[in-house]
Length: 249
Image 1: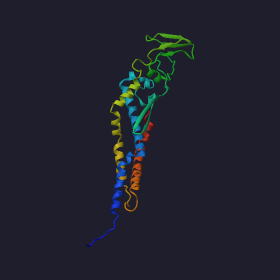
Image 2: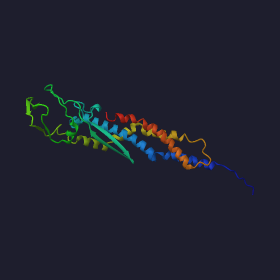
Image 3: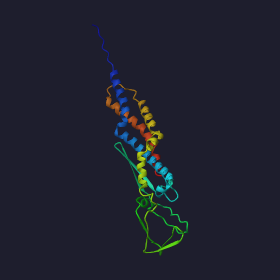
């Protein structure tokens, strides 16, 4: 029976095309690209938590005034805290540390002024505080009735609930409420990062090498795809680096 033998590299080409497409589709699972995306999401989470705390402080100033400079409750530039974030193996960890206060405590009775440097930390703990004179012969303040009070050096006055009864542990509770809220999911969606990553993958998909046939292994095509996806996703994640600079006011 007559027969024809046709040499064709079409099968190799189809395999390589398939490998490239698979590489584009699965690239975000690779360690390097997952880290890039995770770090960008972590930055968004830091900004989201900061905005959440500011909003809660404006709603409940009596509970959160202590973690801001005097008379700046709920304002980003008045924050007495800094948020740090790390990403590892699919998990985001947000941590916070208090900053020292740099502004003078309000004093409506005279020109004497002082700074409560560890205002946020002390009030958050809610522990009684002893106050004594350091650079003067006596501690001078006014009672609730407006009468002057003098406490000589060596003596002290105890403030049982610094900042008020509502401040103890309120900052920690606010952070926990953030975890239970949908604020982060909303901010991720509004940031546009998901759509941008999808667009980056689509762009990489259009950059398939012109020569797909030959003896190039399918593994090589898959690595080329991952490299192209990584390149475009890095361009996306770099756009969130500025947000990291403003995350802490």
